Image (cartoon, rainbow, N blue to C red; front, side):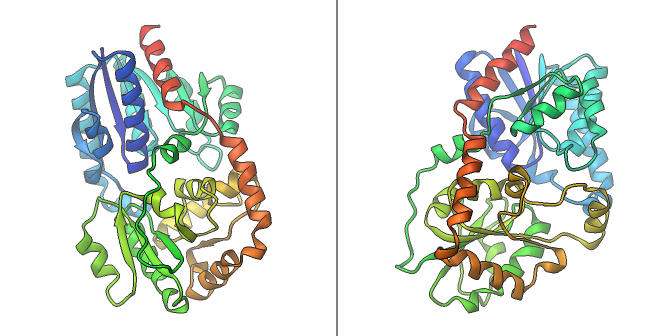
Length: 363
């Protein structure tokens, strides 16, 4: 039995590796190949392409790299045909993966899709493609199951895998000294970090009684972060985001899955996001939801401050951070976090998905 996996981002790579781990428990004769990253590789999966070579974010960024994107797509098709898998597991990364789903369908490969495109936010028409090309969807938010069921898509919701990640963390972080910590999560892509981290760093001078620590991605070197943070009293750590969060008094978080992770660990946060002007203008014209952070979206109200694009200023970051550092004002926030935990709480998500994947292959 052979399974080909395609993911284009670190979070997807991590979640996919957990599926592989559970699949190997169910059948240790499965052969895997993938477009993925270090997490999949650590599970013994042979990589045809590493995610560090393929991750582009935003309309403008994709446009200026369009020839590389086309080359990657053509190479991926060749890799799939060469491997001839019994099933292709697509993980997130919709701009690329939905095209692969169409190719796979036309070449008679079974396709499962894990972590849905945000069709509830924009490009709802993607549901039609998913219905046509994907055998089974595995979604990670409860409301997504209802959306797909209404459209006649075969869909499963077993819970959110973030809980598995939090449970696997060691919660073993060496404090620098007795000062409380404010953690910085500037994202995992170069263009995110280059735009957002410098703005986060500007508020350090207002908080001399706190230590600031950056959650760094191992896609980049210490030298990269040292150059960006030159002149600032700030440290950076690799591959211990949950451990860092566990000792944080508050956190500045780039929009995305990290906002949910921060909330589930009960850490007050401010969402910070900025992209290129062209990408923002296009996205603003297409997105039909009032919030950008998943916490606010899931709870359908403004629970945490969102500082987006022109609102991401030193003044606004300081004002929002001051609010979440005032523990007397956080009762309502923690109550909302409790509601989020109730909404997403689940166990053995990856194990259940792995069992369903094998069921799809054998059906």
